[in-house]
Length: 213
Image (cartoon, rainbow, N blue to C red; front, side):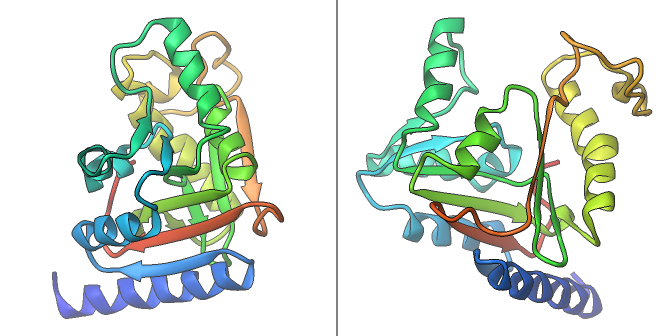
């Protein structure tokens, strides 16, 4: 990576970290996914029961495998499960010791923006687990809420729908909310965390490289 690119990324991430801190979140900047993994393992206690949201970022970092090797019990749904097992794990996301996810977008003034289908991911990020850990690449940083929602609808959601084998208007490279209806629709719940929820300890690891969608 060119020095100028690294400088620009660091400047933007550090500015975003400062904003997150002002909004009550804990925030740390690391340059690489390997550093993000080390930082995450330091933040998650050994023996903690860990819920993991539907996140490409968390899996690209390699956190789930490392937690299991270490002996942590991990609740995640990206494996073969019956509908009943899947629902039970989603409920455990609300009662685990630590919940780990990414954020669909993070504004430069320190807001976390997410769009969910089922809602268990955003629910667990807000209240339930005493500790929440967010890992996000530099590609998730946006200027403001409007840009964040547009990024989610036009960039993140189409790729996530394709990953899950779904068919929605956005997989045709256009977000058309009027034609996007249940049961195929994936965007059901929008949350914007302007400040840290009062009863939840939330840490954000921002990574100086693109991760996830």
